[in-house]
Amino acid sequence: MELIFREIKKKNVELLRKALIESEQTFNSDYTSLLRNLFNYVDEAETNADLKRFYLLTISEYLYRDGFVIDKEINCYACLIQLSEVKL
Image (spheres, rainbow, N blue to C red):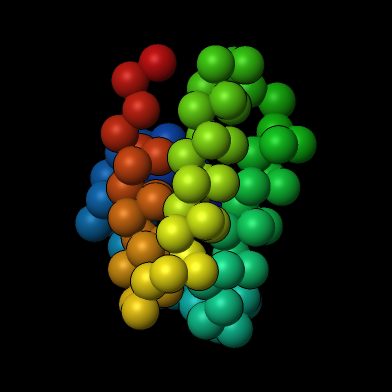
């Protein structure tokens, strides 16, 4: 989780995609679980309150979408891209 979160902060979507693929075995390709774990990781992280709020709301929105999408990997990656684009 730390690797993915670090790449989100770097705002490099190419490395973010690579980190997601490389981490696939650690979360057994369960993207719903990955988003939940990311939510918990961010919730426990010590970071700016506005940034944390944005991250948590964004992740929760993609968790909601997860129930409706066909390709959960694309949904998860879209979430990570949106998180990396924060301008707070």
